[in-house]
Length: 114
Length: 112
Image (cartoon, rainbow over all chains, first blue to last red; front, side, top):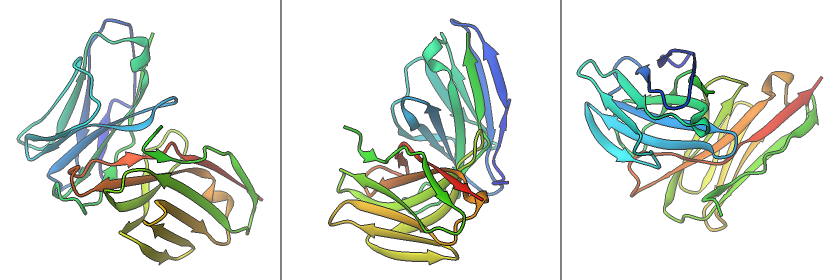
């Protein structure tokens, strides 16, 4: 157990809908990262937050947004869902946002868009 | 072409074999190299972490980085059925914050 928690474990929804994925980092970690894992694209970095502020952005679609709250938990919002958004979404956390910082991954949320 | 290439496998070996897993990359800015293990439907788990070129050993696992060839390896000695999983290499660079770029993963099966 990495200490990173994610809810829900599974999510099934329809195209066009909006969902929110939640992540709680390890105790003491200030940085949160979101990754998407699909069969064709592998594990891809979406976005990073550090102590409430956006720190880095990857290949995140405009339909997706995230935020980190004062208690350091983070939410990833996915809207206007398409079939291709079906994937595993992982959250990771690290102590700081430093280059050498180890990222610990949560168990993931499996999103299925029908 | 992807920044990080990894043979997807599957790689099937008998129990007790030495396993060699590899990744090649194209971005010379990568400085930090990691290996993660991912069991089916679980989150990636960090196995090894190395900085720049060289070797690092931890129990049955050895990680090697050759920056001149842009090639990294993970060796698993005395492989066990419990090592059956997907192994992901990951990298980050000086100018990319702490975002990780992953290989596609190699699926390993260790048969009793």
